[in-house]
Image (spheres, one colour):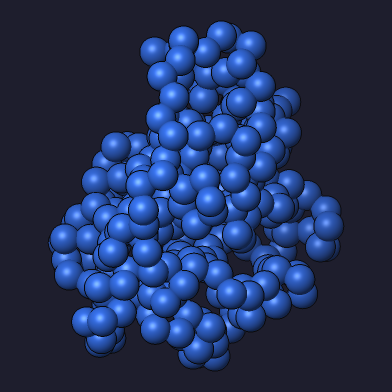
Length: 274
């Protein structure tokens, strides 16, 4: 995909530096706990089968519309969060596209692969397809057994019930299922992202691609890179963002959503207390 140089220049032109830097005292345990709960509660999407998802298979990253250096930035974010990456020559499962018109690009991709958003409700689908968003994204989720195998259709109960698999565990809190993110598409609207540096936009795309979350992700009430396209713009992943990403990839996948939320909060607190 060719993007005219003038649009790239607009995107690369950094916004005026009006950021206020606060150098304060170390957060208390109570402040960290409140912030962790706020972050988790703000960004997590609607759970699938009562659970939250993340990548489990290695990610294979491709960035379209920019040079390879920006794919390397996404790969670096994955490495920092200890997310497995596939070997060179792999089949792309995390695609980041820089487009002159994200709405048209999204419609074109989903016209070929409509099942990718089959799980979205009408409101979510309408937002993805029509909203004016600097960055939009979706993840394809797959139901697996706790051991990583895909359950047979006969082992899944009717919609709204907890699906069952043939995996076994003596644990009373093991759901016997896991929700894997198996592919994702992130589309950056170059025009709507103008004024932000390419590095910043690539890092933002990495965050929302590696961590399934709400669209658009709200500012979570603590310093966060998710505020990139708001007046409170940040220019890099914050310690809260990094802690959330690390916590997500420590989260047990075969647990209920409420237990996973608790695990995320606990792990974020541990990360920030280091």
